[in-house]
Amino acid sequence: MATLYTQQTKNIYKTWFLMTMFLIVIIMLGYFISYYYNNPGILYFAIIFSVAMNILSYWYSDKIVLSMSGAKEALHDEYTELYHTVENLSITAGLPMPKIFIINDVSPNAFATGRDKEHAVVAVTTGLLRILNRTELEGVIAHELSHIGNRDILLSTVVVVLVGFISILANMFMRGGLVGGRNRKEGEGGGILIIIGIIFVILSPIVATLIQLAVSRKREFLADASGALLTRYPDGLASALQKISNANIPMKNANSATAHLYISNPFGLPAQAGGVGKKVSSLFSTHPPVEERIAALIGNREL
Image (cartoon, rainbow, N blue to C red; front, side, top):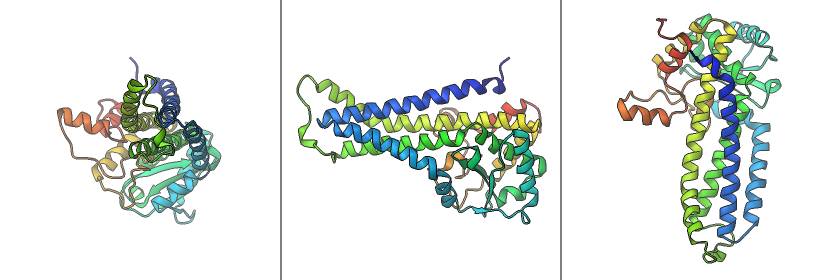
């Protein structure tokens, strides 16, 4: 019987497929807008700007995220147990020791960021350190180190940039503010193409956001599995997720742009709904339901 652990390679391939689809969407979107306004320069601008944004996010994403979250670098003498937990698990995972940051917030949460394993950061809140015991903390840290080892942070950053750029292009088109707007191609049998293109422009930001959320949820499941394999004790992470869920405290500096990076939704868990409402809520959530994550880790056993 297939389990979450057998799906890790499959999920990685699916994520790269979705990333490729994002690039195709950007090229198609740029091509249509350039055709509509009879201005090839728009397509070139779309491709060049998207590449430039990716490069910028690659080099500075960690600093941006840390600044937005209000994180400060942890001192060894003040957070000795946390430091040694990260150090020991990094050695076990075969990863360089990441920098450790602390967020002064009562909400229990954590995230990892950085462009690669040599420039990685693990950040945890003071609220997380307050409510978790050692084995639970190890589970959370192993989860975040798995994000680093799986290159999830780089993928997530690129997805965010592409989603934002698609939304910008669509918004510019709908407002009619692009250069060359008076030279639209309405003849040459292009009427149907124009209608299809407009529908595509309207729907593309919505579809891009849904794909972003899907990638984020897959990453969380994969990091849960990898973290459990790293500690050889899935109950620790499962118990930590349960405590974080029970606390359900929104973070002071919660931001929708970085929400998917955290181990748990920084805005707090939405009120439980049933039937169709629950499915819709799950669809637009950056994280899979906690009960599903726990069930994947320990099955139907009691914690």
